[in-house]
Image (cartoon, rainbow, N blue to C red; front, top):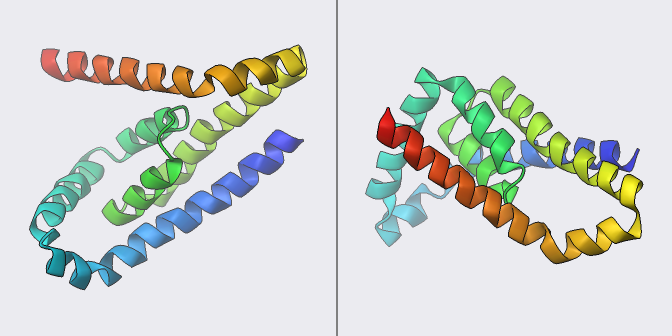
Length: 146
């Protein structure tokens, strides 16, 4: 029950983050121009928007993986809004990515009780960084060979 409540509010929060990315990026353009960041950011955004158009469900898989990393998910939600990830792929990615995390944690806590809680408090961040490193190595291997 708590995992479901957590997932529902996480999804609502991710939609807020998406909207912030979508609308706030345009509002921040004058500041970015003043800082001299506009050209670099626009180049990245244009490239990512093109990638999203060609491969919309690739973002789904990236968001699924992001649900397990220690990188704050709000960065992914804002970026998704900025580059215009299709809302269906975004919501599905958030649902699966966040869902697997909260339900896995709920199952572990129910199954192992306080022992799991102690273990998770001590090791969850390290596990997340390890998974992120493994994903980066896999991505480097994949893109290096294909």
